[in-house]
Amino acid sequence: MVKNFEDLQQVSKENADIAMKSIGACSKSAQAIAAEIASYSKKSFDESTAVIEKLFGAKSLEKAIEVQTEYAKTAYEGFVAEATKISEMYADLAKESYKPFEAMVAKAK
Image (cartoon, rainbow, N blue to C red; front, side, top):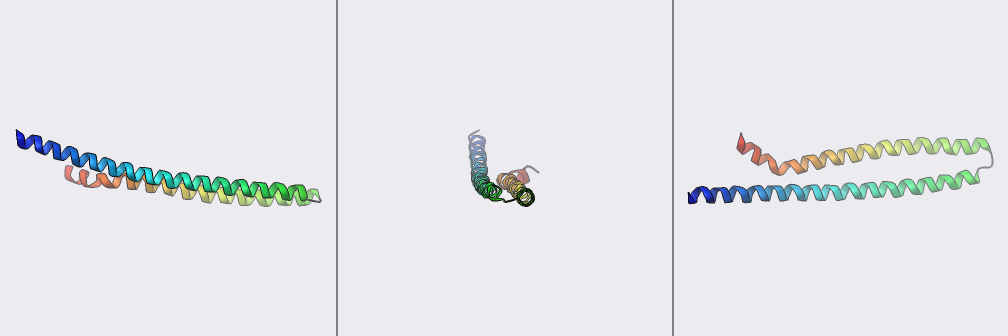
């Protein structure tokens, strides 16, 4: 009976360690994602502000349309690139969160 209890304690300790490693990986990845989103938001705001200044300085309707068209194109391309980057970061988060459990799953097989 004592051996079974000791085994149970050991397994519980190992599972707790695995869970803590997974939580640590999640936390680290979530911080990186939040920092990336904050950086993109600041960059996007700065670019929008610059475009507004250009629009106020436009001497003609054609120039204003040109500035707006250029901004729309670069903003869309930037958004797509950033969305791709963040989705890759989320995929990495999932992989890193699962990694500590791989050994446990291998043992179960």
